[in-house]
Amino acid sequence: MGRLTVSLCGVTLDNPVIPASGTFGFGYEFADYYDINELGTFSFKGTTAEPRFGNATPRIAETPAGMLNAVGLQNPGVERVIAEELPKLKRVFKKPVMANVSGFSIAEYAEVVGKLDQEDQIGWFEVNISCPNVHGGGMSFGTDPRAAAEVTRAVRKMTKKPILLKLSPNVSDVTEIARAVESEGADGVSLINTLLGMKIDIARRKPLLGNITGGLSGPAVFPVAVRMVYQTARAVKIPVVGMGGVARAEDVIEMMLAGATAVEVGAANLVDPYACRNIIRDLPGVMDKYKIENLQDIIGGANK
Amino acid sequence: MKQTVLTVKENRQIAKSVYRMTLSGDLSDVTRPGQFVNLKLDGFYLRRPISVCDKEGEVLTLIYKAVGDGTRAMADYGKGKEIDCLVGLGNGYDVAPSGDAPLLVGGGVGVPPLFWLARTLVAAGKRVTAILGFNTKDEVFYEDEFRALGANVVVTTVDGSKGRRGFVTDALAGLEYTYVYTCGPEPMLRALYRATDVGGQYSFERRMGCGFGACMGCTCKTVTGNKRICREGPVLTREEILWED
Image 1 (cartoon, chains in turn yellow, purple):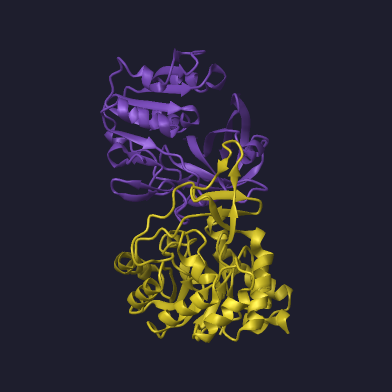
Image 2 (tube, rainbow over the protein chains, first blue to last red):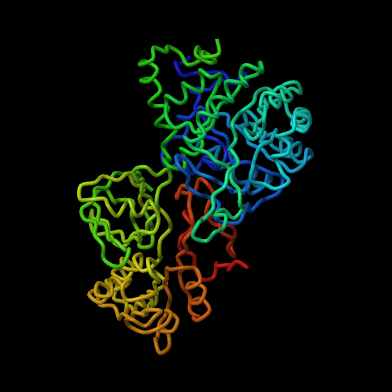
């Protein structure tokens, strides 16, 4: 057991740093830059039953201390993920991976989890009920406690592997959703997905993004994420994975003190492909500075 | 791709709102004309992708237009300024299919990536013709530099204030060419595609998040499937282009 080791839903992570879904593809391309086995794990690109092209471009806009994205769950569909992406990943990544799944109906969530369940490399499912960029899709499940519970119940039947539900911050009380999924057998929750936002091109007098609205991420959202992780960790007994604007080792420690068992890093990967590796390498020094012997010991430390 | 720190050698205005920056450092991953670099600017969250204009040894030349807050801030960078860069991004142009008489067509800040390409093609003994299109004479740059390489150069301006009046496609008549290499605004690329019937390589511009293939922000549809402009592009062959709408 190293100083950085944590246990997430019974599966050991060498360190709590996890590249977030949608910022790390299926991992193997980052293996050209460094050995991705240095990571705790990573959450792969949100996968749906059918292939999706995603939204019209522009899909990205810069904001103060962050960015908006409206990619719209572009992915090759679960069949090709199994046939093409996971074999490529297996060659370069030797740890359990987190499978991020999305759907437009409860049946679709169940179908995708059921198909992926046979893949040995998948250690956890992260069920996205909070993507803000797909019309009539994921968001509605994540903003209604009953719908969130129904998705959880459906995917629970399809796998014995740990299931984390990825929650939306675009709700009045995130703890209500967290309690709803906990009661249906979720093994954990991860939050926050992006905050719904918008940018208008003042020269063209039109919304900049092809999708009109997009999800805000980056350091701008970090304090919002810390608050919601803190509230959620107090409200449920299952592990919480914290994310939202994490960019450095100090942010990982702050998230864990708020109650996170592990920490996802999203937008930072898009600015610096080495962001997660650098955070992991910086952690021991920052832990020494704050007299932290083992990361596992500080989880929820600010909640006590 | 490589992450590296490049140091500004010179940064000066060469036309209306257009600047040329030379930088030095490790450019070993910059392998082809038509690639781009992605610069981290102080105070801006996302990097700024800029096409490579030229590379000679350890000196990189970028030409960029100060249009937004980021590039305007970049215009103030002086000698000695260090910039965190991702270099060697994108596929770049393939010179192999050029034939004996390649035609290079650039529009505005689409002109710069054609410069290193022209130099490479001339060195390979090709008869290079370059059409450089601008809106007006104040925006014209690099006419002399392309000539100095030994290229046959035609300048066009939309208002006729310099060179031939009109669009780049108005300068095609009478030219003989074996292949087309181009970079510029999408309406220009499309007009050129329609006005020519030889093979070619077209460099596209998109808003990008990461610039290295992670975010799926710049995906476009092509004949051969979805492509990320930053990774499988920015250069697409004529055969694979699918014009939207």
